[in-house]
Image 1 (cartoon, rainbow, N blue to C red):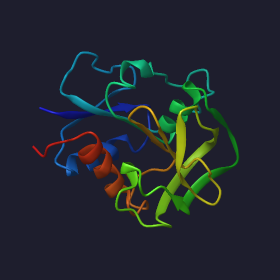
Image 2 (spheres, rainbow, N blue to C red; image 1 turned 30 degrees about the horizontal axis):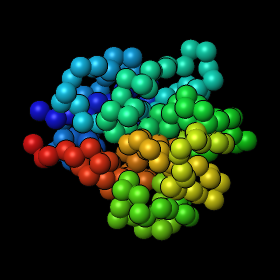
Image 3 (cartoon, one colour; image 1 turned 180 degrees about the vertical axis):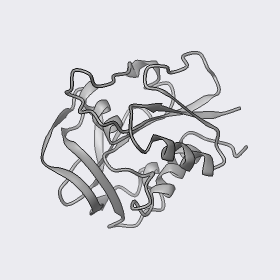
Length: 192
């Protein structure tokens, strides 16, 4: 049976991500951040959750991305996005002010499969104290808000996507569409 693995970095909304994925008729398992099932051929995608930590905290949860990056599609959400950037050579810095609340995607790359069916100006929900000030080489920005240039970015070489907003929450109006684009279209989930 195909499944999506959600690696839990301690976010309050990890269970909600799981629920959204299951609402797409897709089996998913929430696992501790350091327990990725290495040799499980049924895994068709990985989602990295948010976290109460900053990537700069000594006690921040870390995972070896090489276990899955380049092998199966990956979506980083909030801390997950910051961790991808930080680990692969981008830059994450403390935001001048905590970015919290509604924002609108003023620019969206609608040709990117993650944003298929999106509308310009789509409302998203931000909640982070750090911000991604530079994305890794071989990545491109695919979504920006007025205040957050790197709100969404994607690898140009591997199936890796990252969003600084929370698609799983109700306030991100097209969040379900984004998760469907990832789980069904990108990962190829066949409805069970």
